Amino acid sequence: MTKLSETLPIEEARERLRQLISELAVVRGKVTLASGKEADYYVDLRRITLHHEASRLVGQVMLDLLDRNGIEFEAAGGLTMGADPVGSAIMRAAGDQDRAIDSFVVRKAQKSYGMGRQVEGPSVEGPSRRFSVTRRGCAAHSGRRGRRRRRHCRPCNRGERTYRRGCRGPLLLRLLQG
Image (tube, rainbow, N blue to C red; front, side, top):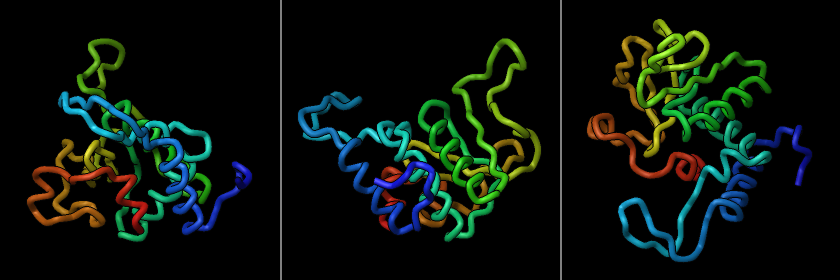
């Protein structure tokens, strides 16, 4: 194990993240899924995105993936709970590179108190570019009225059909494939 404050070269970071996913996130044994069906294993990536070492690697590897695919953005986030730690990890990794990337969270419903916002985070209004983490993959969003951009995230782009229905398969596992 390396020092927690040390930034690994990207290939080492990707390999260490693979190891941590295998060790921490893959739950073996009978598991009942949300559909009611049973499975012999379950991959719980929250065990990765909320882990002290793995979360730094998630941010580093995802930021590299986005950069290599030419996806420009000013904020990373998505639907609250699942996307919160991923957006924060990307923000942290960007900060380690002296880059100003913010994070945001989207509530399922608009708050009825306080400022009454559904999207929380700095500078969430206006035409900024955002990268949104979703349960099934990723989507590049335009800040203008929350409409999706036609240029979908290239690593999982399967054409216009993907744009309409969303990506298939977990993003973290796909990004580890390089």
